[in-house]
Length: 51
Image 1 (tube, rainbow, N blue to C red):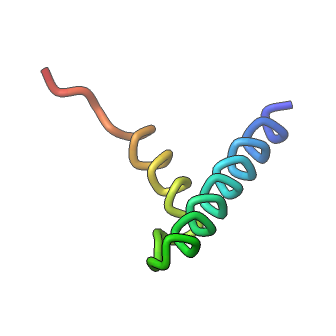
Image 2 (image 1 turned 120 degrees about the horizontal axis):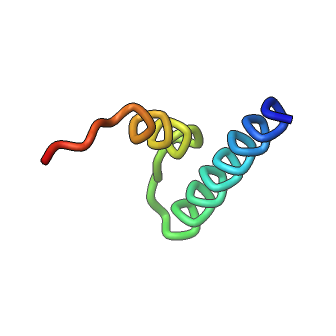
């Protein structure tokens, strides 16, 4: 169950990255790497809150 949720999360983020890449190509710019959304998720999951 947990493995399926993790796989679905990474697959969804990968699809979001592909979508951003396609939109960037339509606008004739290079756009971010496809795995950029996965990197954002990893970065924010280990981030601590500073008050």
